[in-house]
Image 1 (tube, one colour):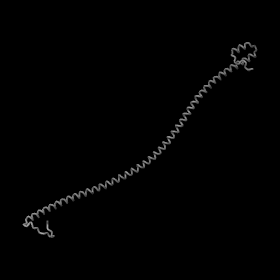
Image 2 (cartoon, one colour; image 1 turned 120 degrees about the horizontal axis):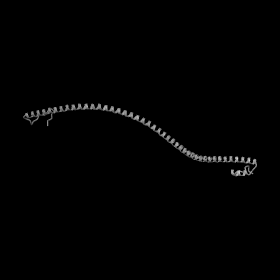
Image 3 (cartoon, rainbow, N blue to C red; image 1 turned 60 degrees about the horizontal axis):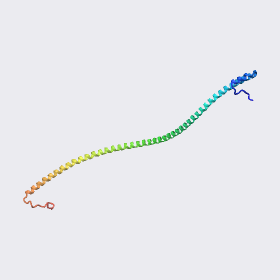
Length: 193
């Protein structure tokens, strides 16, 4: 038999039942049972509240687990993105190093070209100076030749004039001789034709 024979009965039912009992010890025992029953109901109410809280916590835990799964997925995506960025950074670093090497090479080539340009410029200036000197010498020579040519022309003109005068004199002398048709042989034995 159960230790609590009145378990499950309402307080009114218990009161009605207890009124019919005259035994004081039984009444005392019943009062204890009532108090125990009330305490049990309170505990049950508390447990129901705790169960409701536990259900709420379970729901919150499910939400938190879903959120955690979402965060883990996002974290995984972030890790992949970080790996991708690190790879791109390494590639950019490699490209940067290649660019720096190329820049150094181009600077050296530019310095070499600058030196070559300077040397060629100096060579060109020296050549220009030599050309100017040569042109001056040639101009002077041309002027001297022009002057000499002018003198030669004057001399030739003078000689031509003298020859013309001499020829006129010879013609004049010939016309003064009566035997103009007989010509005397020249000293060399040749006759003038």
